[in-house]
Every structure is written in C-alpha cells, then in structure tokens.
Amino acid sequence: MAGYASFLGRRLVKAVFILLAIVILNFLLVHAAPGDPAMVMAGEAGAADEEFVAQLREQFGLDRPLHEQLVSYVGNVAQGDLGFSYRQQRPVWDLMMERLPATLVLTLSAFVLALVGGVLMGTLAAMNVGRWGDTAITVIALLSYATPIYWVGLMLALLFSVNLGWLPAFGYETIGANLTGFARVWDIVQHMILPVVTLGLFYMAVYTRLTRASILEVRDMDFVKTARAKGLREGPIVARHILRNAILPVITFAGIQAGHLIGGSILIETVFAWPGLGRLAFDAVLQRDYQVLLGIFFITSVLVIVFNIITDILYSLVDPRVEVS
Image (tube, rainbow, N blue to C red; front, side, top):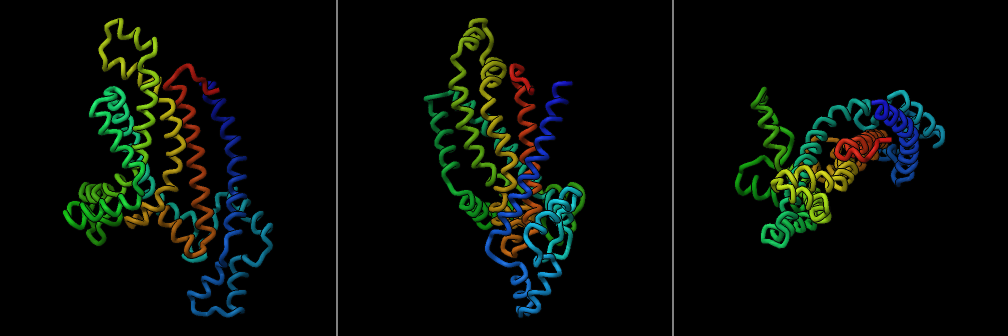
C-alpha cells in the first residue's frame, strides 16, 4: 500500500504541472483562432455598431491585453472557477455539470461495450485462427474500423428508427413523457442503444485486432505448453495463462482511449442530438463561446490524466511483475 500511496502522490504532483501547461496552451490556442465573440453576439443582437461591440468587449474583459486575460483565467481555474458563458449568461461549471452525466453515461457504456466485446471477439478469433470463425470476425472488425462513424450512426438510425421503428433516433429521453422510476430508466436505455453501439463499434474493432495479435504471440510460449502438458483444460489455460499475459497492450490502448472518448463523442452527440458535453462543445465553437470551450477542454484533460493513472495501477494488478514505482 505504501508503494501505491507514493506512486499516487508523485503522479498527482506531476498532474498539477501538466494541467497548468494544458490550461495555458488551450487558452492561447483558443484565442489565436479567428473570430470575435463580441462581434458574433452583437450581430445576433441586431446591433453590430462599433459602440455596442466596444461595450460588449469591456463588459466581458475582452478589451484587456491577452496576458492579463491569461493570468486572470489561470487564477480563476486554480480557485475552481471555470468562467462565465457570454452566450448563455450562466457559469461554465453549472453548464458542464448539467451535461456531464449524459456524456459519462454514453461514453462509459460505449467503452465497456467496446472493451468487453473486443476482448471476447479477439480471443475467439485467435483461438480459432485460420478457421471460418477467425475470418468472419476479422472481416467484421475491418469493416467496423474502416467505415466512417457518422455514416454508421445515420444508417443505424435509418434502419432501426425510421424503417423498423424499434428504437428512438434522437435525444436522451422522451420529451414530455414525464416518466419516473424504472419506466424512465428503460426509456433512457432505449435512447442509448444506437449512439452507444455507433461509438463502441470502432473501438471494438481495434480491441479485437489488438487482442487477437497479442494472443497469437503468447499462446505457443513455453509456459503455455507446460500448462497443457500438466493436463489443464483449455478454458483455464486461456483465462489464466494466455489472456492474462496478452492483455497488457489492450490495457495500454484502453487507458488512452477512455479519456479520448469524450472528445470522440462530439460527432455522435451531434448526430443523435444527445445533450452532452460534446454537443455543448460543438455549439460553443459555432458561437465563439471561449469560456465554455476552455472549460470542456479542462474537464477532458482531467479525465485523460485520471484514466492514465488508473491504467498504470491496473498494470500491476494484472501482472505482478510490473511495479507501480
């Protein structure tokens, strides 16, 4: 336990400096992008004269030098204040807390589906290499990997929602139904199926290929032959000896991909009108709502760092030869 505590302490100290660098870099990149939020707001208000634009810049601090805005922003973030949305007239933190649960439900469900499905299919393909089952899984994985994710989403919505009418095509839950209890949970699950499958298919294909390749490298090693020579059944050999030693590359990729799923959900949330952080980020880009965009970047960065720490700990749990230190 002392080793884990020391490891976590050192990683958290490093995480603070990494987050500081990310916050500064994101701020500079966002402000280097073309577009003036004051001009956009004034244009939508129908009063795009110079005096009104200058008033908006002064009101939101956009007329101050960039380095003063940066110092002010970093100081506010250090105190847990992610700023104020010019467009929606609400604190950024409140906006994100409303959208974060929907995004976490979507991305974590897609992550679990992709990881479990990919490992199972990859194991099945590797243990039947050269047979029709291996060929079928390989072809399905390649098709899922090569097909654009937005096209998959649109085709699934067209088939299962428009033609068959089995599943809802858009949204998080049925608007105006006022469902409660299990009925509301079931309604949300039905709305989740298409976006979760769409988001999970691509990464499931990656896990399938990765697991298959790793198992093929391990399955003929000496310790596996020894286990077979002892008369162990094939199932325990695969679970305890082959998969346990072949799973480390999959864990590595899963740790990287878990944090990136939130960024990858922008397209899916837009296609399925899912009210999450990805949709909020898309709207913020169109509206030049810098504070909201920076807040989403910050939360995404925190999640990536957390998932990387969890990945390092999982290494030592799966393979005791790997020390967290």
